[in-house]
Structure formats: structure tokens, C-alpha cells
Length: 115
Image (cartoon, rainbow, N blue to C red; front, top):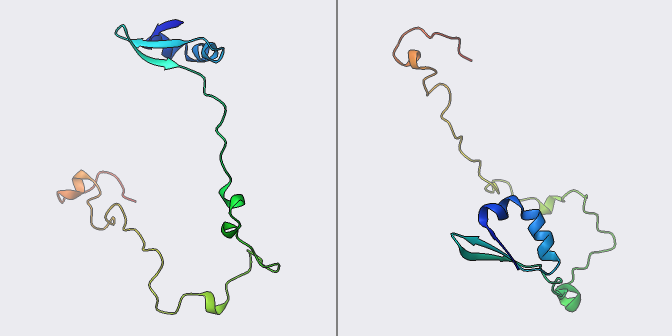
């Protein structure tokens, strides 16, 4: 078993991970108290393929289906329908509203050209 403090664990993490992968226990301590144990991750768990398991969930496409085919007139939203996404308001007020520089704000001539 190897015990290291947090600072040393941070500095030597790659080395300590390699040691932990060899099935040796590595413990990181903080203020003398054990806080973390480095252990290797076991083999990946078997996951069931739900779509293969239930044929009702499998999508079937027509033989003549073309994903790049444009929409027909019937598939477009009706005229006058609200847009699907609203445009976000601008983050800053327009340039005509905000003062351009500290001198311009007080009615004095600006000290630099404005864009």
C-alpha cells in the first residue's frame, strides 16, 4: 500500500495511476487523514441493446427514402404560422443609444474617432 499527500498525488498522478493499475493500493491523504483510494476500473458492464431486443422499437425506412430530398408543399408549415425559433435580443444596446466614450457623454468633443 502506498500513501501520499494530496500535493504529491497531484504531482505524480500518472505514476500513481500506473501503480494502481498493477493492483497495488494507492491512498491519497489530506492533513494526515485518508481521503481517496485509487483503484482500477473493472471491465465494462454488459449493456443490453434495447433496439435489437425489441423489434417494435426498430425504425424501418422505405426503400425509396432519400434523406436529402427537399420537403413537399404539404410538409411546409402553413403561411402565417409563427416561426419555430424566436430570435434572441441583442446583448448590448445599439450604438446610437449608448455613449461612445467618456468625453462624448458630457458634450465635449471626442478625443478619438468613433467607428
